[in-house]
Length: 366
Image (cartoon, rainbow, N blue to C red):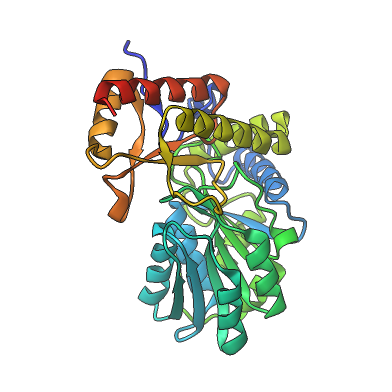
């Protein structure tokens, strides 16, 4: 049997053996007590990982973008004014979703190599009292930047705005403390830091957000948070739940809890620093080339020499090193190599990444 490809992209991630084993168990009924008990345990562990005692946590059978869309249709009404704060690809996706639902979204778009200037954000909030909510991406997967949750949370609280955070590629790798930072809805998904297959998303929803939900006039059916809440209180979702993925989440969260959530964050930070340090020693340039940014612990981005194309490297690495990295996104698709180091990722994996980037540098002669 051939050795499985080492999956080191920014999601999906490698699965722990315990998760694989749990998903191989016989199917159980998604309305039965056994599954309800599993769901309750998943919710309790997610609340702890979200750092919340006051938020409700919902499981949503969808990708992460489903939870992002759900946040919009549940909190707002047609014509509501939002402020989208973005410095990358997925921040723009959030903006496009809002516009698709007839929301009046004003965008502050910083460059992909830039730190978010929160004084500019505050100026917008100060001068426009009609803004009802802020859309914000914690980890921008396009450029491997971690944006400042504490800073945006402080502004949202100061100006009494709803704060909706995309934490899809940060959750489980970096702290997303929704109570501490004043986040009203934080969304994430199963396939990255949570070490499970794609197919489930998660939303943590504050009491303030529930007040907004009661007044929302946008149409929703599948993504109705109020209906989801009724079911999650019974350990269920309103639809035929993907039972194996919830079981996978239960197994992965137990592993993280056993290690200690803070230790999980420390492991990601340590290994991210090691990979980037070794990459620089080998002559690679980190992307973005900006010493003021905070680099995410869940992935790294390397800027390639002009003669080398990321798609060629990705193909070569897959064929010769049995490892899968990812090319960039948008305008950086050919010039940036992205390497995921999130979830079930340990020292031997980091050493392997360094071996690969050293080997491919010699192979391509740059």
